[in-house]
Length: 111
Image 1: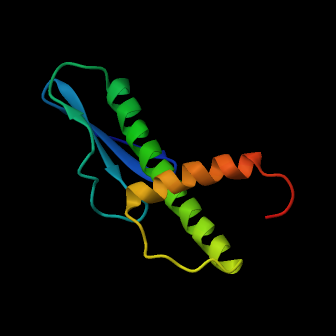
Image 2 (image 1 turned 135 degrees about the vertical axis):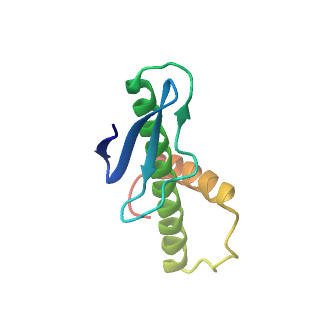
Image 3 (image 1 turned 180 degrees about the horizontal axis):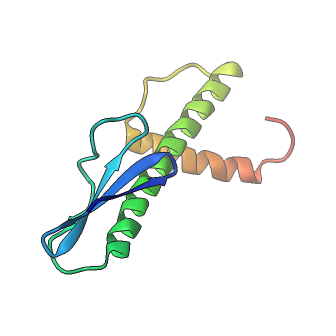
C-alpha cells in the first residue's frame, strides 16, 4: 500500500517494491515523477528511502535558489551600468553566486 507525503511542496509517493521501497518524487503541479526518484529492491526501512527522497528535494530547491541569486546579481550589475555578458553555463552561475555572497558579506555600506 502506498503512502503519500508532502514535503516542501513536492509530493512523495512511497510504496513497497520487492523487499525494499520506492519514493516517487513529484514536483509541484507535475503529473510526472522525477527520474532521480530513489528506490531499493533490497530489504530496507521505509524511513531510509523517505530521507533520501527529502535529500533530493532539498538539493533541487538549493539549486533553484542559487540560480535565482545569480540572476539577481546580473540584474544588480546591469542596473549600475555594467554591460550584460552572454549567459554563462549553470556551473559558472553557481560559482558566481558563491563568490557574490562572499563579497556581499564582506561589503560595508550601499552597493
